[in-house]
Image 1 (cartoon, helix red, strand yellow):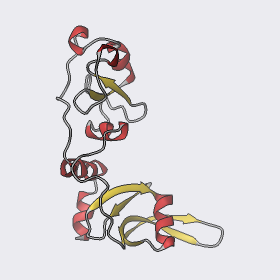
Image 2: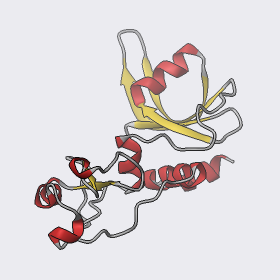
Image 3: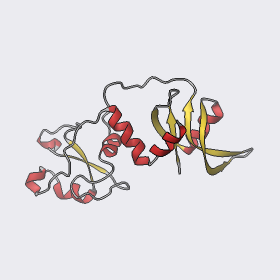
Image 4: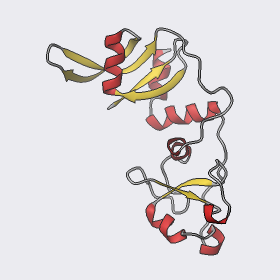
Amino acid sequence: MNSVIVLNADFTYLHTVSWKRGIRLVLKGKVEVLKYGRSVANSFQNLHRIPLVVRLIKFVRRVYKNKVPLNKRNILARDEYTCQYCGAGCRHNPTLDHILPKSRGGSFSWQNTVASCKKCNQKKGDKTPTECGMTLRKKPVQPTISEFTNQQVKQMGLRELLQDLM
């Protein structure tokens, strides 16, 4: 595993970071390690065990309270990195597609933007899905913060790990 789960001081899920960032946080004393992995990183002076789950020592107030920020990474996470037209996984070459194209007045919003594989995105081009004979697998909506964080933990397959720590 090459990512580290970061929990807030009250054990709520914050986000994930790379294993390198996780080791830096441990060395700086900003986190306490709740669970180590089996992997080891070798530096010039020491061997460092790579953490799986860390907890911040100081409580961090969330930057956003009511809404999940709108960006490409969060849209792909909402759609679980699968094409919303054909259902193929698009983890390696993900693209975003505007349901109503920008050239026709569409906007970059939660309701108008979905994950798409390159093939479907090119097939749809500058048309609406109905003009191309394509249908969306599910209606795009703006997720709530609790839905979004639960989905993030579920996607990583770490729900059981977090429950063991509690």
